[in-house]
Length: 100
Image 1 (cartoon, rainbow, N blue to C red):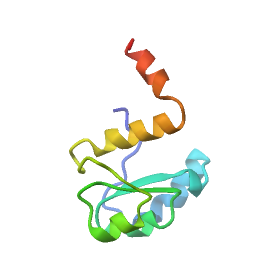
Image 2 (image 1 turned 90 degrees about the vertical axis):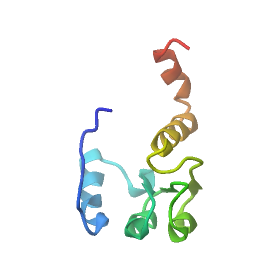
Image 3 (image 1 turned 45 degrees about the vertical axis):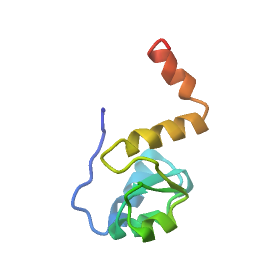
């Protein structure tokens, strides 16, 4: 998947947010965050695109702009990636990579 960075065991999760914003030179309104439990609520309320996975707790779903059809660990991240690529009109570029 070519994951560039992993932040694990961070509490509160907002403690790394400023570092990420500065490093990638993005505004908080451009950030998507997917969550499933109360520990994620602090970020859900700050980012531009808060997403809850299907099996998230009710408070996370309420804070979300979008709730996935798939559960966390069962394709939710792929669903989110496809959603973003289509919204940015980049989905066809992905399909071309696979000669579709």
